[in-house]
Image (tube, rainbow, N blue to C red):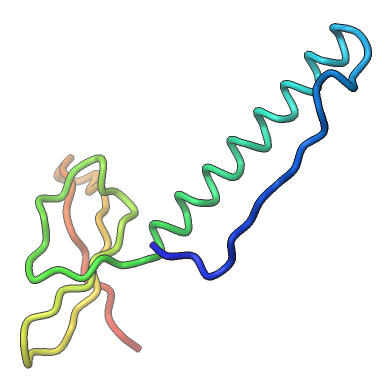
Length: 98
């Protein structure tokens, strides 16, 4: 997925934090920020449907991913990968256009 806005974060030096207690808190904060940015990117990536001619086999790794199936002159169809608790398997569900 190509993002239109490049983002950069300049963080203060950990050496500015006085004492090991403050440095540990600073490290935890930086880790939380990093994890949140990674999760936001993953969410954005999931919203970008990959265009395919045929759906791949549904799996745990694809849950929440969208795929736009294009087949020549036929209408495009949008699918999302889900876990079906009734059949205990992964499957693609078509999302109807409104």
